[in-house]
Length: 149
Image 1 (cartoon, rainbow, N blue to C red):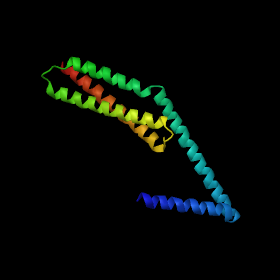
Image 2: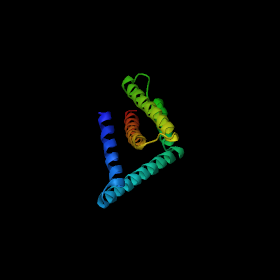
Image 3: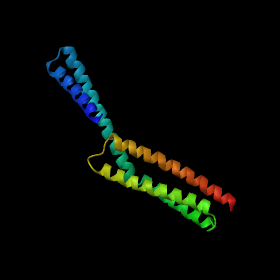
Image 4: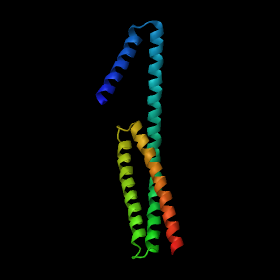
């Protein structure tokens, strides 16, 4: 499937290049317009990557991970050793936090390299969403165990 997509992309680029150099005036104008749009998309992707790099540099995610760590420490203090159900749920939340931290480190490396792409930006946005969901679930968990105690 990837090979078919690459072949189709190569054909489109070939036709555009041919039209740009050997086509009629209308075909040349159309090809030039497409090339300029592709250039604009490339610049936009570059800007998005720069913004994501800045988010990581500013420590945006680090603060959230620190808050989660504090939340889990509070929860551990409130839980009794006999409460295996809540303890198990807390362990699951901590496990998800560790997985997201690994994903964050992977994304940081990709953003620091020259291999960052639109997919990296999408992965970063997914990380942000998942981290927000984990934070909300963790807050609800802490509220619930505080009510019980």
